[in-house]
Amino acid sequence: EHAMGQVGVGASPLSILVLLLTFAGMILGTFAAVRWVHKRPVASLFGPRALLLRDFGVAFGVFMAVSLPGIAWVLASGTLTPGVPLATWAMFVVPVLLGLLLQTGAEEIVFRGYLQQQLAARFAARWVSFVVPSILFGLLHYAPEEMGQGTWLLVGVTGFFGLLMADLTARSGSLGLAWGMHFGNNILAILLFTTGEALDGVALYRLPYSLTDPSSIAGLLVADLAGLLVVWALLRRYLRGR
Image (cartoon, rainbow, N blue to C red; front, side, top):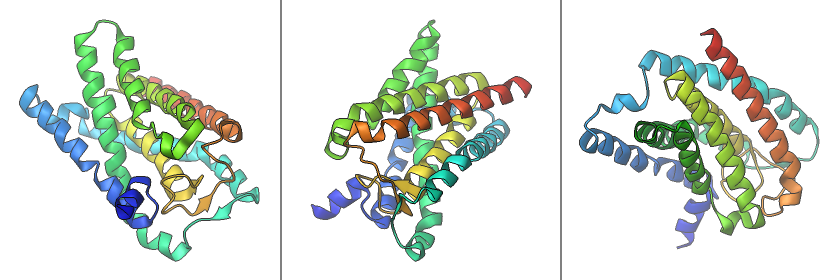
């Protein structure tokens, strides 16, 4: 039971990796539904391959470039405490990166691929295909045991993130932009910085905030939202010039 609890909250590098790999089931289930229930190719979830790969690279690059000033400021602030030892981090960084690629891909396939496409085909009102998957995406991150009073704040921010990615997906015609942006975000949140409540098993640093105290993370979340909006705006501009 203790071991399962560690996996659930990602309290060690190995438990983080196991947790990320469980998202393979989400992918396989969605593929099965698309292929055998809806009778359409699995590739239709992603968009054209060349577009998917190019958009993924662009979004990941833009996200990391926009994040660099914030990363530099946090590292220079002197408020961080060490996370896992560097040697441990180096041992797990590549497997965890691959796991994050799988995990973020699974969520994009389900929420911006399958659900958004199905709802867009079913309802004439475009907002339905944006809002419903984004609400469900936010609720996927509902974890009151770990987040306490900050749970709904985190759900709201995550849902807003989902709306931005839904817009980019609809405008671009592939999952690439949303996937690249999501991948970059989760690298920062799992491999680099954590607040210590959950998914802290492989992060290099711990931030001096607590997700269980909304007042302590309000400023952090505002900065996070501002950064996401900048990335979204830059990617919208990229789409206009593509």
